[in-house]
Length: 385
Image (cartoon, rainbow, N blue to C red; front, side):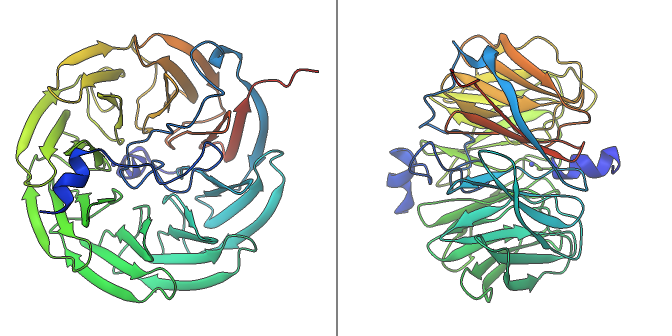
C-alpha cells in the first residue's frame, strides 16, 4: 500500500475539420478495450456496449477476482478474450477475460501505475523504473524497452505505429511502436502523469505544473499552450472540437482544440485528480481533495451544471467510465459505483477490500476493475440456466 499523496499523483489547421466532426472510437466493437480511456480521444466511453444499462446494472454480480501481489492503480485492457493489467508489484498480468485464470505475467524493474495499451498483438506500458515496455500480448515475452529520465506513470496512446507517452522527466515522447526507438521528444516544462490524447495530427497533454499543451504528432513541435494552473493529473478528453481537462484547483476546463482558447471554466466541489468522461454532450467528473466527494455532470458546450450526485463516502480519483446510460467510478471507500447518466442517481455499488483508484472499464457486458486489495475484478450478469 502506498501513501495518499503518491496515489493522487497517479490519479490525471487540417485537424480542425476532423475534430469538429467528432472523433471515432479506437475499438471497433464492445468486445475490446485496447487503451486507457477506450479511444485515442480519451473520452472514457464505450459507445458499443449494449448488454449492461440502467435497467439491469443493479443485477451485477462478481464473476471472478484474479489476485496480483500489489495494489492495482492500472486500468485494464481487454483484447481478444484476455484481460491485461499492471500491478504495483512490478508485473504485467494477463488473465482469461471469461474465467480470471492467469495466462502469463511479465516483470518490469519497478512498480506499475501506468495502464496498458494492447495494439496489433503488442502490449505497451510504463513503469516507475523510468522505462516504457513492449511485450508480446500472447506470451508476455519482452520485445523492447525505452528509458526515460524519470518514473513513467503516464499511460501510452498508440496510433499508426507510434507510441505517445509522458514521463516525470518533463518530456513527452513519441516512440516507434515496433522498435522502441525515439521518434521525437518535446520538453513540456512540467512533470507528466497524465496520458496523451491523439487526434487530427495533434497530441494533447497536461502537466503537473498546470499547463495543457498541443503538439504536432509528427514532429513534436508545440502548437499551443494553455495555463489553467493547479496540477493536471487529468488526461485530456477530446469531443467535437474541444479539449476537456480537470485540475487540482477544483476547476474543469474546456479549450478550443485548434487554438487553445478557453471556452469555459466551471468550479466543482473538490479537487479533480481523475480524468473526465465525455459522452453525448455531457462532461462527467469526480471530485476529491478537501471538498465534497461527488460525481458532477456539465453541459459540454456551455459548462452549465446538469446535476450533482449525492455525496460519496470516500475521496474520488478513479476516472469515470460511461457506457449505455451508466457512469462507473471507484472510490477510496473501497467501492465501485454505478450511477444514471441522466440523473446521477445511484444504481448499484460493490465493496472491494481496499481503495479503488483505477478506472473501471466496460466490455461486452462485463465491468473490469482493479483495486488496491490487489485483485482485478470482473462483474457481470448471472447467466440464465
